[in-house]
Image (cartoon, rainbow, N blue to C red):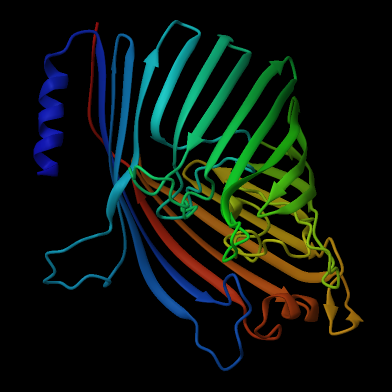
Length: 421
């Protein structure tokens, strides 16, 4: 049935005038060896080996005042379905959106869609994860010229079409959000500003006679600045979080700065830091003082072994991350090495003893090779050298071989494209 739908769409596209229709695919199998990934492993525990795969079929259509995008996605681990199985529940719509072009400057985008801004820190598509991230949202887009852009977004989440007010499960991570994002380019400077209001629904006074469904709203506000001069580039960002979440006051902050320099046509060096506020482990105050990166591509930051903010480290001691990047790229080959030095942004305690802020050092390495136009091979290896403070936070053994290796093929062919004037 799904094949018939796409064939029908292809036939329709072939007879329309003044249009663009693209049909593309992606197949991305990835082998991984996890031995202390995301959490320190105990010395007497074996790691895991598996192959996951993302398969996508994407089509994009454009005709006069309308644009459509649909991405059908299947995510699986090799072997998780019987070889004789007729039931596959791993397929879903990653994206299904439509754009109404109201004028050359103004458009509306509605439906399931990836939302990505700036460096992916607050809004990102989490492309490394095989399932990735997309939102059900409405976006108002205003682009008065090539140097300025304003997006205003809205989302409202529910579990069903029920006629009564059911408590939302927060499957999307929010009951609702509203945001405004501006970006402007000014010669060598780029400026972005984000104002995001995120609502979480919960049951207040649960089990009591006055229990009620309540939505608390947290605000994330801040700018990001970029600068480029010849072979030098730099960026800095600051975000602040306030408001309430689950009946607790929020006061948190984030600061980052990065600088890079292209030494030659093949070689680039860089350095950076991030500071995400946290809460002392002996702090009995119920207020939230730990910064949350919310919907960002967190795998991109703070080490690729995902010890921080990838489904973990929420409402913890925060993080200071100092990193160095060495990158090489020539012809079809690329390589990169990134050491990270991690420190807790708030106090770590072992019982009543205050521990050293040093959490450890992680070294990430990756190589890539473009086999053909639509085929890329990447492989990586990461190693965590943890401390006793990290062991308190994450459990497991700091002296174990905490490492992660992977090999990934990405096939992204364009199956069909047409454009008639």
